[in-house]
Amino acid sequence: MPITDGTANYIMQTDGSGQVSFVAPATIGDGTGTDNQDLSLTANTLSLTNDATTVDLSGYLDNTDNQNLTGATLTGTSLQIDIENGTSTTVDLAPMLPADVSTFAAVRILMSADQSFTGSGWEKINFDTVSFDLTTNFNTANTRFNVTTAGIYRVNVRFIAIRQVLLPTLLVLQFM
Image (cartoon, rainbow, N blue to C red; front, side, top):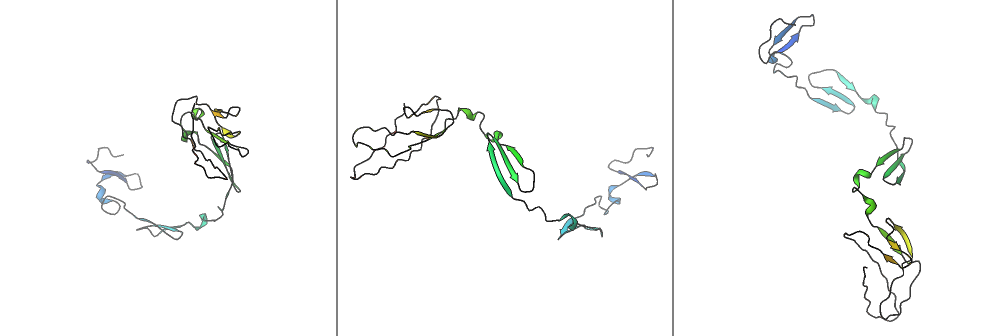
């Protein structure tokens, strides 16, 4: 190490034999104080400007990464992805969901058979089949959806009426 401090903004340089000195940055590299070179890739050859040495990358291209997804399984919030000739991986989807989805009321109900209507007065549609009911809000005994949590609900209804005589049909949803 030099005995004295160098000049401000100078850098230390060694001659490889143990001699260390302070030099101005403009005296090293390309003379501008930097070692500015461009990296380029042509086909499978990597090279630097101002350097005759190249790196052949073709040995790293074995083109054997030909895999397909063979399956996906969702259990709760864990998605398992199966990879052909590879190791399956699991992704936790919980961070993508709202804080507590257990309070979300979601239900899909159907009729297992056609229903005949008298054509006069109010008629109740007899939904008797539950595809899913996340919070058990639908009661099949009285065919009612019980709202247990205050909030905004979206209701989608598909109603098909087949009549021999054309009469006006009005569908009214009654929420209790």
